[in-house]
Amino acid sequence: MRKTLTTDERYIQMTETPIPHLIITLAVPTVISMLITAVYNLADTFFVGKISLGGTSATGAVGIVFSLMAIIQAIGFTLGMGSGNYISRLLGEKNQTAAEKTAATGFFTALIFGGCLTILGICFLEPLMLLLGSTETILPYAKDYALFILLAAPYMAAAFVLNNILRFQGNALYAMVGIGTGGILNILLDPIFIFQLDMGIKGAALATVVSQFISFIILFIQCQKHGTVPIRLHNITFDKTIYSTILRGGAPSFYRQSLSSIATTCLNHGAKPFGDPAIAAMTIVTKIFMFALSALLGFGQGFQPVCGFNYGAKKYHRVLEAFWFCLKVATVMLLILSLFGFILAPDIMRLFRAEDPTVITIGSFALRAQCLTFPFMSLVVMSNMLLQTIGKNKEASILALSRQGLFFLPVILILPHYLDMVGVQISQPIADAITFCIALPLATKVLKELKNQVDNENHKKNKERS
Image (cartoon, rainbow, N blue to C red):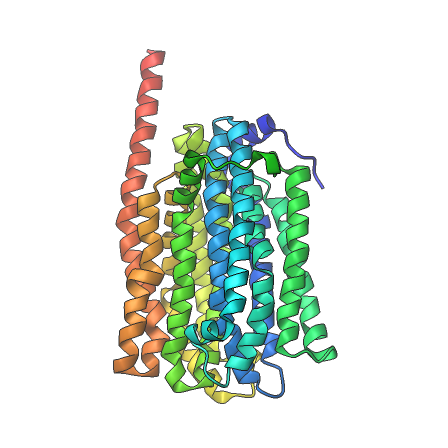
């Protein structure tokens, strides 16, 4: 393991290293972390689908509880991205004290909010599962799975905060160790708990809970040992300015993640009239799409600390260079993934539910439809990360609200009434295409502002020289 950089060394690294090399250095560990996380999300779906009795209903239950996990992620990402964005700018300004207060405040607040979700979720477990779209046949599996997830909510939410705090300091490698270890452990424990210990879907949930706890412990140790902004209890503050900045910076993540939960719930309700196979198929497609999207998100997260540091240091030319580099690479990457996904859609679906041809048929069409618009997500994601990191919270929030809220929710509520199952299958691709049309002008405006700041700085330098 390489030595930990001092605060000054980190500042020099983030503001002077050539952009392509710096982005790749930070992005590779994050991409690996995101892919491992996505793989162990897929692993639950994969192994649960192999349960001999009730496999289709159990697969549907994973999709139901995915909405609950999105709520936990909403807490973690809101406080993690909000505090992380602010920390990266504070470190760019060399304000270590405020950075440490921000980190402690975000971390301990996540533990408290996660605990509140645990209590409320357990008290209203069955109504919650029905609200999230469970059918009567899926309900027993969903309750078994959700109970374990709710017990883990506090440290799962706090782990997302630790992961983001490490990333925004430029310590993506240490974040990868924590996330990666938990992910690999989950994949190993799934077949042991589900089949060898004959725990069924409870085994999948227990594997997730155990692996997430190990990941949390490792991330906390990495933050204390290798981070330039350690977590200390005495640094927690109820200062309105810090809380306000964290919440404003995390608002786009809150909208994105909470709407993801609502959108998944609506997707489950939209598929519900067509039976458990329809819910299972859309669950699999959603997990596959999230796996592919995780690579893009990981790459973009390598951009965020570079963006934050250099924006705080007023090196706007580096912010622009980093954005365009990431956008080009991401677009090519998504085009390749979409091509493979479109061609291999039936084979991919068979990996998860080969015993159910209805699931394969429904899922193959939905996956191919998603592949047609997936490349648009490169601009949407990179623009959202740029806007959120430089503090353009209003624009970032609009973009975060657009995909899963402003467009997807009306589409999934309306189209199935006219197009039946096809309406469910094409709802997300339609929302993605419209969101791209919103992202384009928002990104263009901010990029022009950054270009003007660069031109002004160059003009000042030329004037000083003359």
